[in-house]
Length: 553
Image (cartoon, rainbow, N blue to C red; front, side, top):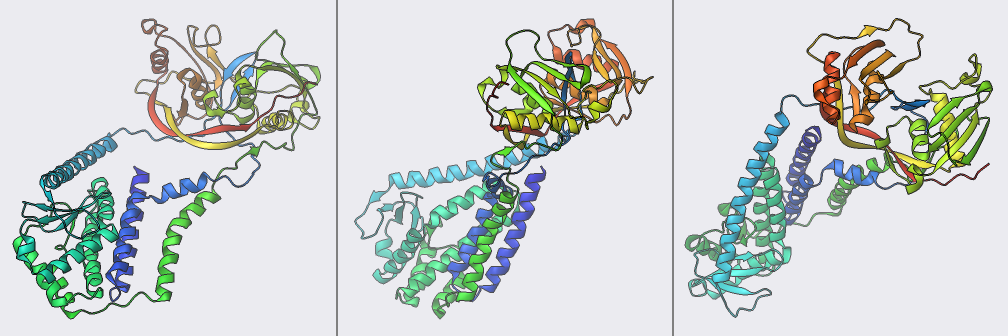
């Protein structure tokens, strides 16, 4: 809802600015004011957010992506899932957006149906009319309907004249009426009004949109009047021709059928009879209008351009890098194991590029996009030793701790940059999430007895959800939310407001079975006094732009 509300108030502010500009141009030609109102109409169909987004798609710079705190997937002997998600989501509990959408849809359909029926009526009149030989740039037809002369059609317009008009109007009057319609054809007024009719259908609930429509009709008719008089037509003859048409014929039911009536008739006749030649816009005002229009378009594009992600942002080596690292193609044996050895030497066994990216950037598998087909297939053995200055080397005995800290993730990012020539960018994508909250039942969580115990979480048996239940030791709610995500194929956001770490144990309800994994998780969490709610929110995504297979050494 927020982007829509932002667009509406921004467009309304734009309309107010357009009104002030037309006031400043009230002594100039109507054509200038018409264009100002048309731009205000187009603004409703072109949100600033869209222009910003377009600008953000133009990647023009290369940036260094430094390690940031993101959700993490870690492994120690077996895959264990933990971390702190950074995505934010809002979950609707009231159903108000759905209700508002239903109301909008009803209005949109009603207006569209009314417009379609009127269009079909006019189309039937054109088909039933007969062609007449009149010198005019577009086909001319005579209709039996008592409709005023008007140009029907957007891309293949037809001038529709009521039967008997050639005998009713004097030749000079008929010429002025035809000159008026020719102005509409040259200006493509039907196309402009069709565009605004679409805006009216989309924003039917917003009064300024209808006000713009009235102003467009008013200024387009006055602009045509001015052009007819500048062409040398007699003002009195022209005014008499318009009055005769208004007395004898009905106005078109469609705003995008340009006729000779419309707008404030009394005011138009008065202006026609005075035949005041409105001056053109002087150069300073013209320059100011052009600058304002360019700024309205270019400004958001520039904002988006400045916020554009780098085209190919390479994972740069950080200050923390492995002292030595050896990479070999995996030829068999253990897969996915990460072992600590005496002296702090690490062994990554049978690891894919996908896994290394997950570890290095603290993301779930579904938060990685792009990359070659071999990222999930080719496996590597990596032996790496952290530098003597790292935290891992100061522990007794030296070992690589999980979850990874920023220093350790920086080492792995450096390895990817130097050996895999890994280049990427970050994107925020809207997607489905789950939100972990407090349930209605009592909490069955126990404060962890030993805060120094290594945080561990898993099933009662087997270390996965195929076990008999859900167990946690010295585990925070962020840890629990994060390790549930792969089994739900969504990020899980912690909104429990429970701080600290806990021990817990909950067996899977027997009646839920193993086939319904989501239902099984929901039922188990309910046993702990927790629940999951579905929602949507931005999800940080790592987009792989370039990567190469490392040379063995």
